[in-house]
Length: 190
Image (tube, rainbow, N blue to C red; front, side):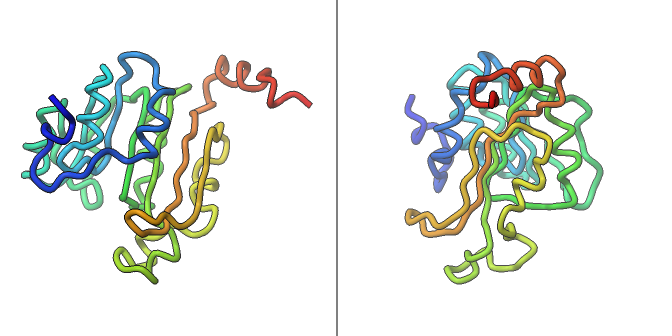
């Protein structure tokens, strides 16, 4: 079954950023997709053999995304964080709620991976979102992931669809083994 045939009407393809960096996930990783919508990333990553959990507040989206894994319906902006477990990876796209960052970072196991992409300042010149609350300031994702190993980071304009974004791939380097491996990597040596 093709990905496009497996998603609800109106669903987009997975983010090119997520597709590009999903190769870094260990086989059969547990992955949390925050604000998962109808499950475009859940469908893609479950198709690669990963175990998915999604969170969204929209009942229709939760119903659709549940075809690709476990989905929790919760209003994470106005209620408590609904999960107690940590995951091998975290995926967040087109979503920003700064107050939630401590919970998001704590939801990633030591050595775990984050794939994050959302709108940045400049997008207000193109359309929505345009409120500063929903647009990252220059370098904001880098600041949020201070102390983590940043594998990739981009900030700028994308032509299709037109938007300004910031995106990051980061490894939770709080794990002493991962820290040692990362500190002895050739690129770290001076």
